Image (cartoon, rainbow, N blue to C red; front, side, top):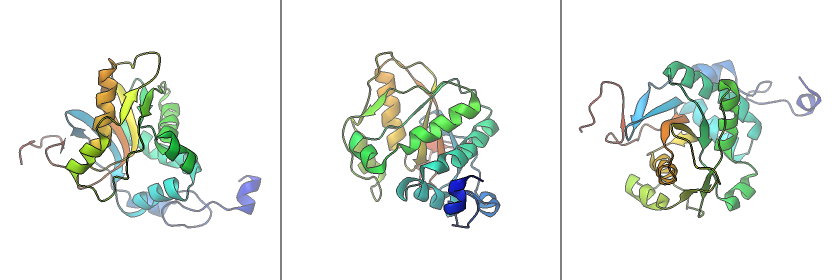
Length: 217
């Protein structure tokens, strides 16, 4: 425990319990998700978007508590280890500069950095968000897809490598991840896997499938 912890004791991001950033009780309530696919690409999710995990993500982004990236990154690491996927390099969903200034940090970047450190793989920056897209909350899948059209491009001097794993905090319909993957592809690279903290249960059946599950409705 450091000096700041004595003045401002850490609180669990899931339930607010004092003394720890992520308590055992909340960890036990995270519902692990089997490896799925999004538009044919592996989709790794540390848990289901509900309960303490949903609250921790909300606390992380909006209170905000950027320090939670370390404990949430541990959840990502465990999920990727369980997936048995070989992730050679990571990238992340960018925020528009205006949104980043308001929040003070990019939640996906911090998660990706924590995960890259645990996996000992490079973190590759390059994706940029071209416009401040309206909030996705409350939008239908088609509305989210339209909202994300042309939202990203690869702006780094070096082209993106192939087989990058793309990190974000939440996958709701997959529209954001798909739009970012398309921007990487336009620049000559490719996304080999999507890695998120939480996956919503409202994901379209045609977009996301589980092993052994048909893509037909």
